[in-house]
Image (cartoon, rainbow, N blue to C red; front, top):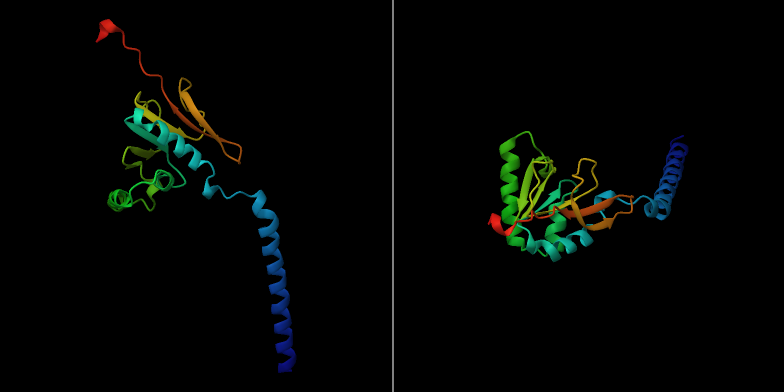
Length: 173
């Protein structure tokens, strides 16, 4: 009786293993090409490379929070690791001091050099000398000047924009 019971358990285990392995390989071979993992956030390399090419003309770069954009900025900008670690200590202090926050993206804003990460609010965040990076949002001001767009496979666009600088007349100086 014990020998028969062992055979049944082993047979059940082998069948279950084969079924689960089949599901795994089906997902791996067919599902991974269709279901792009949004956490990898395609397009940040292109966006940050563009930002790096024009950021000298701006006092600040504001980036919409979400998906840990500070990591993409640090990686694609070749940010100094020592400076990144100093900034991350500040972020940790902010998170710990709040008490009700578990993750960095739950802070209202945080900074890495001239890059500021926050949920963009209009018109409070509007500044003529700031460059912005954001996913499309119906609340974005219509008078923004889109400088560059990066198309994302999920069907949306990452926009890099600013606002036209105010025109100063000679007699107003």
